[in-house]
Image (tube, rainbow, N blue to C red):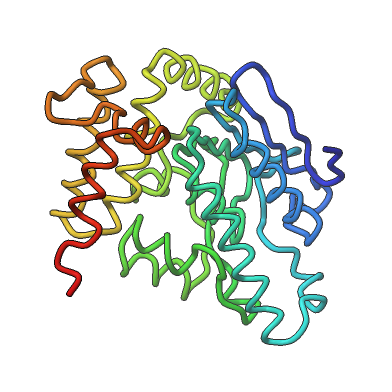
Length: 277
């Protein structure tokens, strides 16, 4: 697929998305947003890719939605549809069965910050700045600033970030559990490569399961989360070769259904009319 506002590359098992509007600090135009959605879908469909890195071209990561284009969004219903479209973009990014990394330099504000919130790892330079300044434009965030942000840094700090609209240093993002690590301004690319080197040595199926159960578990009660944890442990054992359970079908039920064999006939014969009166 040919992109105009971003650069997409695949290098071995890693996809790279570069937001490519440096002249406007990689502001998210309607076109760029649509291309991000398309690129994420390409990554989602791939079984070869294991990792995704998102960066901004030029000295900035992303300053969020292109405010000059907002007048083109339409009426209140159109705005609702676009906000839901962006939410879906963030959800698709967060739900990828790949490990995602945001590499942040310069400004990551508004929608740019919301992109980082949907990634698994965030590494930033010392000079990076972040915040949610929508309040001073007279608008509210639409896809993470009031939902994912308080889940990451807490309600009170999320109110501070949204209601005041200040821009904060990258080290505070690490202190507040928003980002993972701050590196020297000239070390960002090297740190990303080091992280990828470590992650590539892991059990990839194990990492997919870990990402899934952590994302799901944090949004539900403890007992439900523990259920995911237990089932993930069992799945890990199964895919590692310890899958045979004596009183499990081991595929016989499906085969018997396909062939309409004796096991299927017995089970359905006993069950289909049981307690139906």
